[in-house]
Image (tube, rainbow over all chains, first blue to last red; front, side):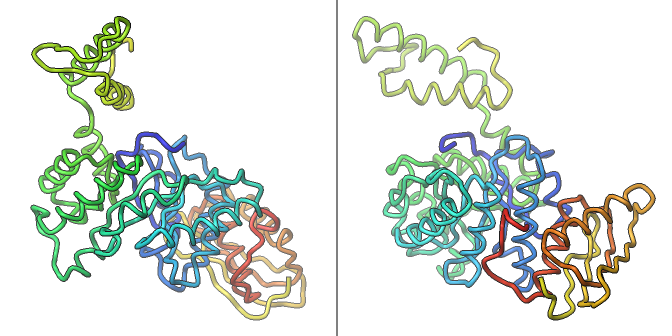
Length: 296
Length: 98
């Protein structure tokens, strides 16, 4: 499903049996099985086989299943794609994308695998990870390069390294990149996800970062520890005031639309038909967060 | 499938299993140690034998050290050990013999 709630995308090492067996208990919106950085070079084959068997055997309770494949410059990525597609993965995350050609390269292998394993061609979604200055500059071209792309994500680890800087609590060094990546995703009409927050014991810093990226317009964030999940879900949950305002907007817009009126004022705020989509999204988010008690 | 060398796969971490496989000429010789031997020993044995059969392995000495792994983990580690022993690294038969 291309459009779905993706507030929390939880990375886990596909080779670790203890992690793969029941991550659904933490209720992330998506699970990212990592075949790349978390897996040692001499265990790539083992992680891939473990992933395939887990996908075939374990009920992940409707959570979106994503695989982070190895880089397109490695000997691993084609077999990663074969294993994941054969197992029925929902989405393939391509690391370090720097051009539409990177997406095309991965897409070609995905399509071959879909044909080989009897999966409907086009069913497997993709997301591009943008982790370098060149990727940031090319973000819009990447974001609109394929119908399979459900989103792009920003990865800060390699980005700060190639920018010759380091991560700070305030995230000033990431602001230009985050802004450009989220702009590119919105312009292309796809979703956008923020980087991991690696200082897992710094809850205050994490909360500040989640509030920042929500305000910038990101749909969610990659995470590396389950304790980060409820914090993100709480921050992304609409307030009761926001829910009431959204309900009122939907009802009023629908009412005025019947009379052919497109712009009007409610509670001193100008409303128009273009705001309907945002209000509906707010209600969907409230429902997904388990806090909606209305009847829309 | 012909095994060319000894191979090992998996770990001794909780929820995992370690498989050691050696080429042999005496059919399948299977040795299992498990933290849940009394409760799941037969199930582990059945899973290992079924996996070897699907892969076409007829001669091997196999040692399993189980740390409470799911069936799918035992299957995955056996498959990995077999492919390593057979020196097969690419174009694995996903969905066919795996």
